[in-house]
Amino acid sequence: MTSRIAAIVLAAGQSTRMGEENKLLLTFNDKTMVNYVVEQLVASKVSSIYVVTGNDASAVKSSIQAKVNFVNNPEFFKGLSSSVKAGIESLPEDVDGVMICLGDMPYITSKNYNDLITAFNDKMIIAPTTNGKIGNPLIFARQYFDDFYALNGDKGARKLLKKYPDNIIEVDLNTEAIFHDIDTPEEYEEI
Image 1 (cartoon, rainbow, N blue to C red):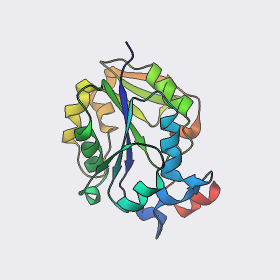
Image 2: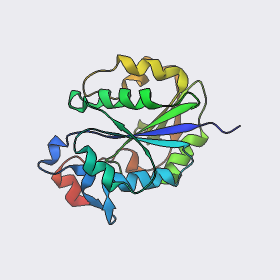
Image 3: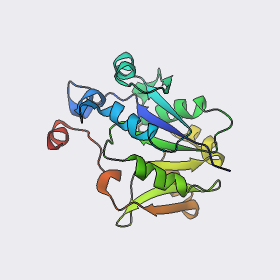
Image 4: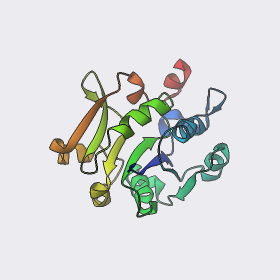
């Protein structure tokens, strides 16, 4: 039986380090950055995609061409944890795990996502690595979903790695993409 892994794309942030522009709406390979991330997920083996919006919600929604589930996070200003919780609350009962994806990490490919999904275990946390260092996205089995409600502020799901160090399966993806998010105008200029 194939495991059902839902993807949550965190796309609600305020992009404060980018300045005036919402980084998710900047162009990457002739698409908006968030749309490019979503398209890589559509091409992967995820069972469903949930895009959590907040800041610039209507612009983010209209920039995504694929059929996805949108989840509004009215408390997006409270930080990343509020978006993670909103995404988890929206998941159907039949998913076996969730992959937490960042809308500003466009270098991660559908193959990278599939390599992580292939390693899924319904008791573990799947973490991509390169040179022994853990990056994003992480996949959490359903048994960890309740732990997300204890998160607060601008902290994401990485906190759970410290809580369950013996429950992590590391998957060496051998790519810097798992560390490369676009937060500042300088980082955007590099691409």
